[in-house]
Image 1: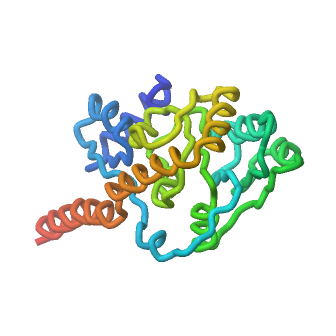
Image 2: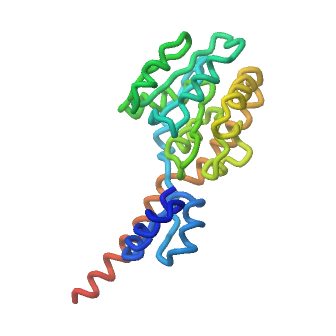
Image 3: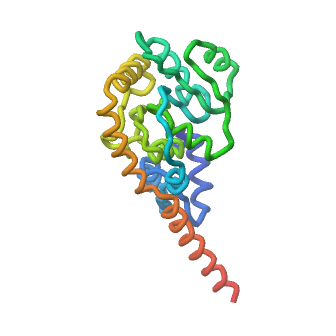
Length: 239
């Protein structure tokens, strides 16, 4: 977080104060920044629920899926190591979708049962990959705002295993949480998910319901109000 680094925050705060509005997309950042800035507003990230609702009749496969950037912060290496340690994978595979930012990960994915798909730019295909997964994993070590990836996981209606971060608290009790950076705890949660299909399907319904609070239409409407007010004031000042 940039506001946790004194020198960077001093420069950033000076610049942010010059803006009419500073938009935060997640509540944790908003709560911290509003103590220092008067021009902060909270407009949460949103997910296009219609996109997900249009993709139907998807068969659930024996795959555990990660979607997102692939680097140290995102904790993909933790996920791979945890998956490798499973004593009995019961036919499950681990699908990794995203762009690698380090050659280290290219080598890490060369294991049996791990499928590195790479970057997917087709929205419908990404949604199908999410909705056809047995469960999804959000293994970030630290430093997440309100992640669009997490919102899309919620909108897919599939069970989620995720790091217990400030930003993932929006899931409340509708996910399997593990301690950030704890490979062993992550392994335990994956094992639990594999053994308890009925229980994790129930919590998946809860996360799907919570995603409705983050409908993209609400985000667009809130942003539009800010820009309309600014535009109107500018037009008045020009008269």
